[in-house]
Length: 140
Image (cartoon, rainbow, N blue to C red; front, top):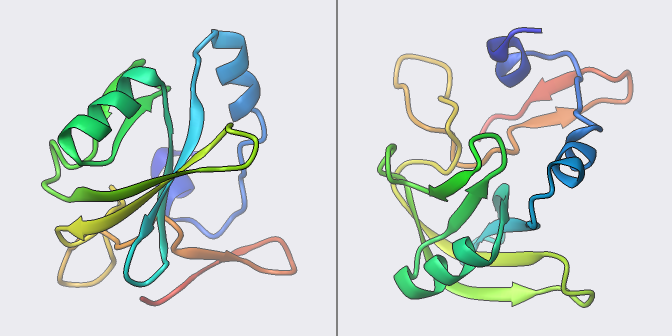
C-alpha cells in the first residue's frame, strides 16, 4: 500500500504493530491526544517523552516526539498550523496525556482536504470505519 493510499484511501489498514514497534525500540513515550478546547473535537494523536512534554509546558504549544524520526516534533514548525496549549490533562493511570489546544491555522492534520481549495484538514480523524470494513471520508 502506498503512502497516498494509506492516507487517502478507503481500504482499512490499521497498524496494530505500532505499539509493539515503539516498545521494541526502547523509546520512553506515552500517547498524547490533542483536543480542541472549544469544540471538544479530537484533532490528532502523537507521542510525548519527557523532553517534548517539558518543551510544550515552556513554550505553551503542543509538542510531540516523532517515533518515526526519533526527534522532537514541534507541531506547526513547518506547516504554520500551531496548536496553542491551554491545558494538559493526565489520565488516571498516568500513561497518556490530553493536550487541550486552540488551533492556530487552518488545520491540525498534515493531509490536505480534497477540492480546489487545498487546506490542511482540521482533524486527523477524517474517515469513519464502516460495518463492512471499508473507510468513508467524513465531510467537515
